[in-house]
Amino acid sequence: MKHSLREKTKEKAHEAVWSVLPIMLIVLLLAFTIAPIPTGILAQFLLGGILVIGGMIFFTMGAELSMTPMGERVGGSLLRTKKLWIIVIVGFILGVIITISEPDLQVLAEQVSSVPNLVLIMSVALGVGVFLVAALLRILFGIALAPILFIFYTIIVILALFVPKNFLAVAFDSGGVTTGPMTVPFIMALGVGISAIRNDKHAENDSFGLVALCSIGPIIAVLTLGMLYSTDSSFAEDIIYEVSDSVELGKVFLQRFPRYFKEIALSLMPIFIFFEIFQLISLKLNKKLHIKICIGLVYTYLGLVFFLTGANVGFIPAGNYLGTVLVSLPYKWIIIPIGMIIGYFIVKAEPAVYVLMKQVEELTDGDISGKSMQISLSVGVAVSVGLSMLRVLCQISILYLLIPGYVIALILTRFVPKIFTAIAFDSGGVASGPMTATFLLPLAQGACIALGGDVVTDAFGVVAMVAMTPLITIQILGVIYTVRNKNENTDKTEPEVFTVADIYADIDDDMIIEL
Image 1 (cartoon, rainbow, N blue to C red):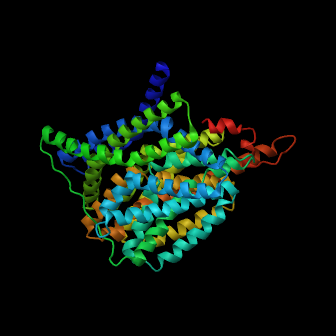
Image 2: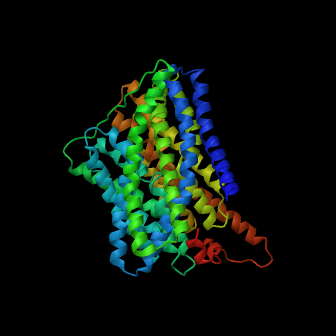
Image 3: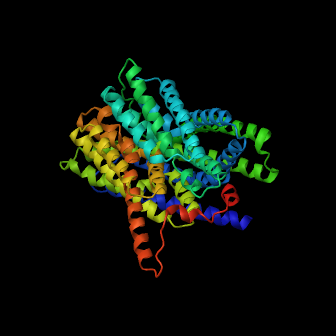
């Protein structure tokens, strides 16, 4: 057991280091060449990077030990009640609780100054609660995902036409930040737990798509808020702490640690209490598994505290200052390729990405590889960041990019297997996590401020763009996968008809529940 834990820790450490190290090296290269950064901000960034790495190690281990098994067992327990009203009520409560717990949403809410934090957070939470119920019912009744996506994205476009422009980017960003490190492991596992009870071979296909629908709810909720709320959205600029020596550097981090210890404790507490109630009433897990999940929650807690402290204290100031410096150069357009390079690597540092890749590999028995998914996600995020920096430079409305992007994504759903559509729309929510909110968004904000633009209309929207492009790139991966499979089948003596659902036909339902 000790040897296994040591190997697991070593594996997670290797993943975390190679996820964050490229971003740190890129920033260092820029700092020592074309974009000088004050020593204090650079020191904050480096120390923040170390904390981010440590946080990723603890979080990924904790998610495997706690959040994933909790979600699977709660989902299975809900469906075994065979009472629709219980599934609806509990699903709604879960959606609201998990959303309020999401750190990414709190980061976004703090930057939108004219809407009270509680109003924005509760609007988003209600949206997620409603759409989590819709997602669970979709799995339960085996309803196709693509038509649902088409209907609700059409509603989003119509609503966007009647909302003040200052609310548009914030609304679309809220859909991306909602599905972060707290939400993704739990609700994806919830889908697995519910789909595992179904006996048909399409059940595992339907286990994906929860994140996709839960990303739609916040967009509709905030667009509706924009139509009802009396004031426009505005930007609350972060304070950049200037440090002159190592003592001040230490104080900056030590002053913020208590805040995140408290915030994450308050975030995890409702989930823990909910799970313990379920344990007493319905689950009744054995003592060993129960203790294992509790230990995993402690790992998750420590991981999120380290990660968010490092990202917020170290990465936000560096991203903001770097954006300001890059657009102040004679060749300000250079922020586009630099942003694309950063975007390519930064998605690898998103904690929830590993959760999705692991689940995809397990449920498809490795037929859809994590590596191919990661490359597709990286390419998608690189394109999205490049387009976001172009928006900042040219002050392009976000609708001119999002509407064509979603149209292409919805058209692609007609040409790829259903599982790729579900994974693609899940990937959009997963890719737009805390690294996007704490580095890419400040990068765009710093550039926008330096150019004298409107931060709310021109800089906000980075998260939305990062959430949109993977919908296209992952489905393109699905097209390639389908074509390759057809070519392989034509080479056989006895050609066979292939459906992606066939790869699940031999998976034992009990094995899925025990993942």
